[in-house]
Image (cartoon, rainbow, N blue to C red; front, top):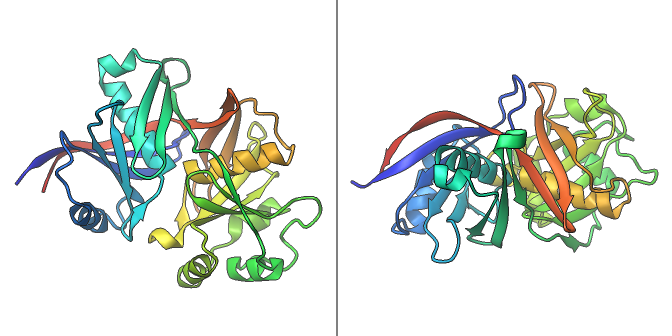
Length: 293
């Protein structure tokens, strides 16, 4: 058996919120096969949303590969936050660096900004956004999300599909009460996402519980083995690009509250730097030890 350093952290925690759980397995080489990584991720079903495999890189700080219990994931924002926050906070040589470059298995090299000393957060440069055609009938979207008929804001708020890490269907909902209270059927929603080539669905409202927050979001991700992602980097990165292109946000620092009415809302920070969207937050380490493979 081979031993690997193992960290389980909750990303995007805020106050008493529980964040979004991710595990990181840190290797000194790339000896794990895709089959082994998938098996490890499958064994974590119900314990974390995704597991991040962190291995050395010849050119940058490290390489990150993401798996859910169902499949390899192109990009995992909360897993990147959880992993990099823990690694930077624990390593004095990294703690002194303001910017690190990190390789991802599917989305190329991204920048990680260390703001632990100033904001108790790290920020991740979101992958460049890609727009996809949206031709799904609004009534079908309301039906599959089990939203009350007429809940989707049809007045000046676009429904769009933007990939800023994951292909995200972005749906505006008028009322906070409608947005926080829906819990779609996971199997039906998974079929809908697969049929329409969507990775995740983000619904949002500009009505908020905390007046200091900019908007409220929820993200559904049945394709990856669970109904809802309680705090999301890639989804909120797509949302940030949506806000910019819809002239709803000027790129200055904001915080998004996320989650359904079954939890204390989590917090995802957004800002822009040199024309790029950054998403950020803190992480709370819950478990650290060794993982045997």
